[in-house]
Length: 329
Image (cartoon, rainbow, N blue to C red; front, side):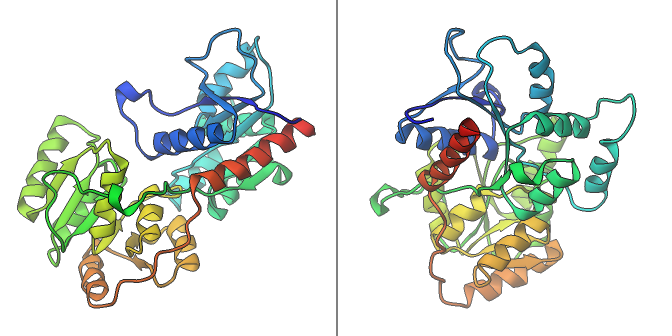
């Protein structure tokens, strides 16, 4: 098949309810596909008479598992991007086990069913590929396409108001138990922190977070809508810290690497893959207490050369090839 495609995107949070890295990934991917001449629509907002060529679900297996039996209009091939944030160890083993539980429609069974129905599965990392294989995905259907970064000119990179002057360490991402920002601030006194991201949690957890920020002398800027301002902070930071319990392929990590800012990260599979690609820029720590010494060591060294991270146009070109291969099958 040749010519522009109508691509339906499913998944992610509605903007009015918030969002995070997944929604940014979808937004940049859609814009890059449109620059290649395709039309991308969110399926919940698309007109009913639009004929889709591809339905692409992003972390949408539960919704797709419900939707597929009721799908009457615009039937087309399905492409699935699981974007899995599964903690290694027990959580990963439980997901594999729960796929086989009888009489219980677990999320693992839903994922496995949707992957069996999909014409292609797009994973971000080799570790995610292993998980999808454990869920029964056909190896011949799997493509590995990482995330990209947006490109900016130097004069576009203005830090947001109220941002402190360097030196500082940076954390970018929604404040949550999974990303462990509280643990980082409580354990690290060697460098002041700037935190960017909305808050996920209860009112009581929010009070604990505010108290931790104050005690650490950190600056929490909340959500920042201008991505160029976030990139300015990433370029100015001594390092970006990402001490998550689980990650797919962090945009904050890739964006920091793309401007030559080292990252200090937890020891999880996705981060080990990054360390293998960029050993001089990625510093893995085994505990929150090890973050401070790592930051001190980074501050004492010359700033590294930026890493060659693909742009979103590169990602879109690879996705387009997957779409066309599916349609020509």
